[in-house]
Length: 275
Image 1 (cartoon, rainbow, N blue to C red):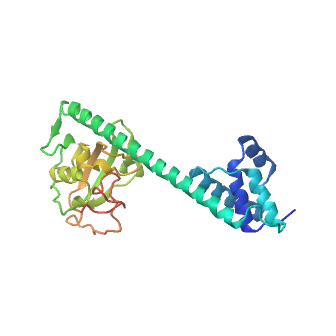
Image 2 (cartoon, rainbow, N blue to C red; image 1 turned 120 degrees about the vertical axis):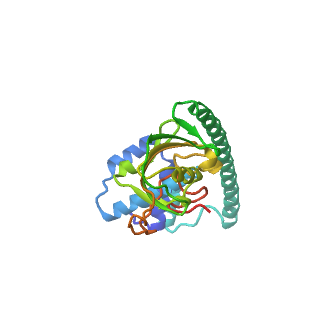
Image 3 (cartoon, rainbow, N blue to C red; image 1 turned 90 degrees about the vertical axis):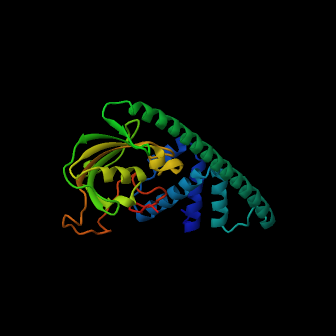
């Protein structure tokens, strides 16, 4: 049995992209992944096959194996260097065209989703405003008091401690401190506008439900993941401490964790503050 170098093993992995389902199933049944060499071979081939598949690259497995055999037996290439350059140039142009089309399709889909979310969000807020107990502020933020608080209210410069649950208007939950079993601490002025406004109106011990329009959340850019462009967000918020430092706690940036979907608009990393 010929022993192929690493590059050949990678090329063999590329060939797997073009294999049909039946051949792939047979391979998985016939080859036992027991030795270190077998496992490394599988991992490398799997990784390269996934990369090519994600880029929509199609290869002829028989031709790939033929090239492997030629190299292993020191045969001359069946394609001249000049022809290789021409073929690869055409291939690169085709791949660039595919990439351009893929990006255009993604942008079109993103814009369509943004329009859909904006329309659905406005309709939701219009109906929600009519419900008993729902208050709408001048900014468009809506809230409902579940439980009144009796303590102090935080300022924009305070670091608060809260429990919360965040959902989309269809009820999809995207984050919850309750699920993790511990509250979080974060600066009031370091989160999205809807949270910053609401927290300063709450009193320590209060529990509110917030209905945040997209312009007070992440706007047309979205936040990635479940929070799409122009998404209206709903939060159940329980304010435990209005000012962590005033209550004798030690404020630590390392210990602060902002709820998903509350970071300032445009912030990429959790804990990033609104500019």
